[in-house]
Image 1: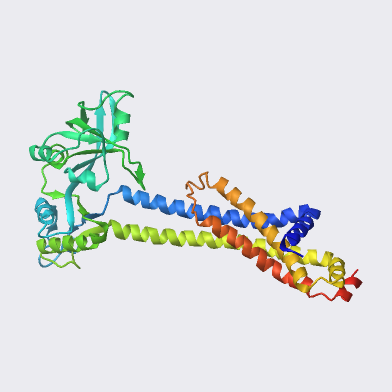
Image 2: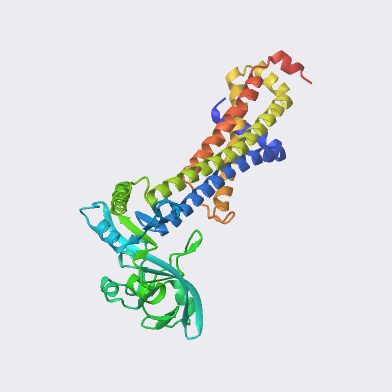
Length: 407
């Protein structure tokens, strides 16, 4: 009998016990859908984490001030001295001869203030910095202009505000540009509106006001020679580690210490992204194994039903073999029936998976992993072959005389 003939017989066998066949397919369907959906959830989660990290900046290092050498004040002997990030550090790191892999350096002073305009108030994070900060932090101007080096030099009281600040202070449809808003106790002119970036973890990137650090020192934090942090942008992601080494060496020399005892902490965005990516891959692999368990259950269901089918059709097998059907034909008949059941379940499972990934799951927007569809079909085919092989071999191995005597 041809392969097509076996397929026709398989379909007849499935339709003759359609409810049992549907329940068997359900196990494969759930397993295949689980593979597609769980891999999509893992991929979506991974991309969400990477997106949040990218919002913090492009190819950046963040140098945080940690206070004092030794972690505090010594009770005996020589007193520890303050370890501060200063404008001199900014100038040294900005020098291409000292740090050839550094693109830009931005001094950063942060403070939380209440912004006020015409009776409306909004709590905002004020960032005092220079123009390079916007590029390094992936901020773009949607209207107006960015703060400039001239603003920093002249201590100009100008500010670029985030979309949340603008929407909470100004009426819908109004133009904030050129308006004076009160930040803390000082008046700042709005010269630019920042395009929305959304949230990066616990930080709302749109609830921010960016002003020249000189004006922030003058009006909000008081005259100071130190900064909260430095945002260093590398020339490329490939050389970011080299840029980190250059920055650490400069700061160590400035503070008469070694890189190992540097009184500052340096956060490398590339390392952070690598760690997050590794964790996401582990999470996705775990979800994949959970889906594999579902497919294993489906495979057991297919094998169980095929064993029952062989038992029910023992006399049919005996008749076919008695009239000359070779062992390979009987083997092919039952093997193809198992494969057809698995592939039909796999097809419906793929369709179900494609529908489910359109919806958020536990706050995560799944992202379809294109490889999961052929993988799911391949696994469904493998399930049919493996689950049907033993029952088919058992049917093909029956002796005609024993099969005909079966009650």
